Length: 231
Image (cartoon, rainbow, N blue to C red; front, side, top):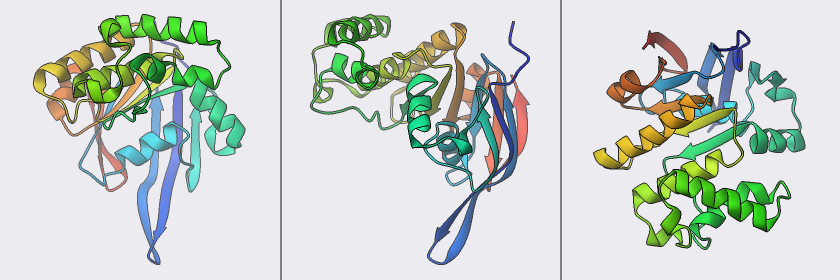
């Protein structure tokens, strides 16, 4: 049973950027609540505000005004050290571009978040190999990204995102550059994490993907929610 207390609470959330002397309103006073264990899709065209919202949830950016609370913490009030701790312990990120370190082997990429927590090399390697086995890449642990396919690189990125057991997993077009078969494999990995209790927020352009796999779909345009579509 899900907790009654929302994991994510955003109230009158705005994000404005100053570009060339003009103000661009990326988010325009949105309200949002996400319960623990939900899988929510953010659906909309490029420029609708999806990735901006994801960056705010991840503590990579701060709102111009309004409130955004995750796991009881007001993110806008956290200092750099506190935000860094929040990103290391509460959220995991999966990007469309993978963002793997090209010079490091697969297991080292997975283990990288643990380095900043002071986890021993032995324990880092152990946990990384366990996760690579979970995503079906135990035999590729010693390969660098250039020796892996796009789907394999994305699975490494998922393993890295899960290594800290995050409460909130943020996915920015995680299947956007992958073929249909590989996309289905990636979605099954995300659903496995969802079934284990992780809260997921996924940005996508694909309404069929959102409808098939998520609990709720929030449609966005011009920095606002247009509608909400329950599963």
